[in-house]
Length: 171
Image (cartoon, rainbow, N blue to C red):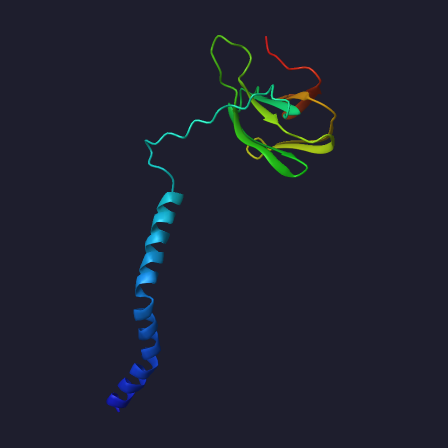
């Protein structure tokens, strides 16, 4: 009976062995490629530096909204921020309130954005700071905006948004 059971198992396993032998080289190549891709997905070695990216020129006429973002909070020296326009993420970054010791204005980050003319829904959120702002904006020509995480009248921190037709400078 043991012999018959062995023959049945062998007969059933024969198609699997034929397939394994037939696809051994392509299967090995696929596994090697999968290993290389998974190692690349894990990221570069710790000593590798990111490829430098040329900053976008805010004077480029294609950019219709130049967004400056800043964090003025002393309680939260660094917060996450995500900005969406009509539901599409246009900024995902961190804002720090720690700048130069002899400079009273916290550092800001500039994001030149190409937004088509018309009405748009602007939304800024920070999950870490539990803050959000939602506002309809109208793009007609070139605009400059300041998104600031700052204390409100009740001393609780919130986002504010100022939009104007002239560049925003800090002095």
